[in-house]
Length: 403
Image (cartoon, rainbow, N blue to C red; front, side, top):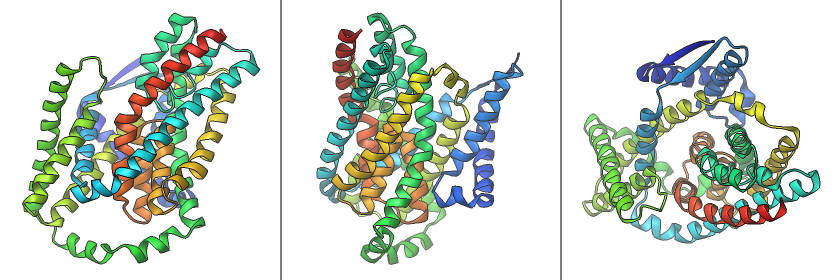
């Protein structure tokens, strides 16, 4: 088999071309655009399917140099999220954060409970079945890689392969479910009309966009880079003080963005600056998502046996029902709640980047939701990692007793 190493800038070039290709497909296949499937997801998925076939038929294996740029664009995006959160906004969003923390933990517990019930009735190893729960879905590939060796040590043979395959499945499912869910909620409850009439900033947006300048674009870029740099400093200090706590770097970039926003608010910066920051953040998100999707190893899904396919199918139903009937209603049953529900399907099945991409795709057809873009990455990117780890630990011990 031919091994093809794609270098850093070549990888970036392909990622950008796939975004354009995804937009082309969306314009040709209107149903994809109608249901808010992101262009980066469309282009990236098609490419990853092609590389999967190349690997499966032993034609070629692609190896991409993407981790450095992935980290860069991911942190730029999260810094922009932090910079969008003023002090007054954070005060208003505090209650919503608390509600969503509980909802994320509840979903993770239900995902794990579902796997153990299925393991009991299908007579399969409970530790292996558990890997198709919040370990791989809410947790993503990171938790799948971290907890599956523990499950294997407890007696779950094949836990690593199952968890990685389930996490890959979750990424794809999360990309495809969020947009249609958000669209249906907005249409069903006429949230687009209500949101437009209540949006006090709608008339201001065009005026702000008209004041975007080269100077402000430079300033926005430099502020984002400063936020990421400061975030890494905080990250290093935090790891020294709390070495056993697994805190993602992007959370510190977002935290630094919030701090810098407080300083800018004190100096009364014009809103046009934040419009520039949002634009750069949106560009970074598109590139990051394209990089993440195009480098997926879809052939890992071949490791899924029939019982685990059934479990994952039930997980999709659980996620849809939970986001539709629990998350949406508990978060206020309004436009922001609909976008939060979209985000919940993203990291509830795959990862926070999927949340951001699907939320962005829905918002591009309607309106930006500051609350959703603050609450979802804060909970999904950091707090949920802590609560999920505790929940997984509890269920691992339960599963061990079932083996």
